[in-house]
Amino acid sequence: QVHLVESGGGLVQAGESLRLSCAASGRTVSDKTMGWFRQAPGKERDIVAAISQISGGRTYYADSVKGRFTISRDNAKNTVYLQMNSLKPEDTAVYYCAARFGTITVVEDYYTYWGQGTQVTVSS
Image 1 (cartoon, rainbow, N blue to C red):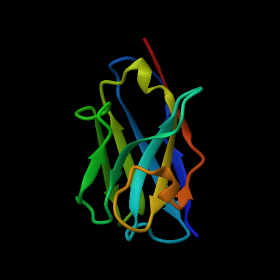
Image 2: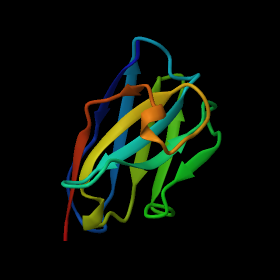
Image 3: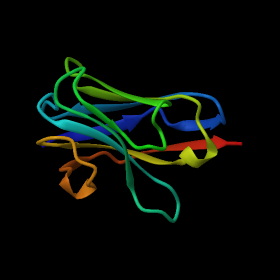
Image 4: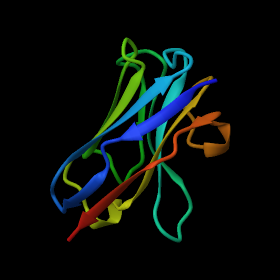
């Protein structure tokens, strides 16, 4: 089993930055693709970014965050990060970390392990 815990969320103003962390325990996530998803009130959960198994490996970003968000991983620490810059009010959501065996996919049903989420609120 893999236990994922997100941290780093909070309330910020538009234009500011936050760095989310996802710490894994139980088993290594170095052999897993990691993704960040988010769910705004009244909306479906959508992928934000994903990174393949290898540190510095392939990444994916949703169009809405390209150029502003950066996903990275430190396999030695069993941790994945999401650096969020130039935050906008529309980035307000609960952010979830997820892990899966296999390659990057945007389909949340293909992710096996999920964290409990961390709230990010961006005020205008």
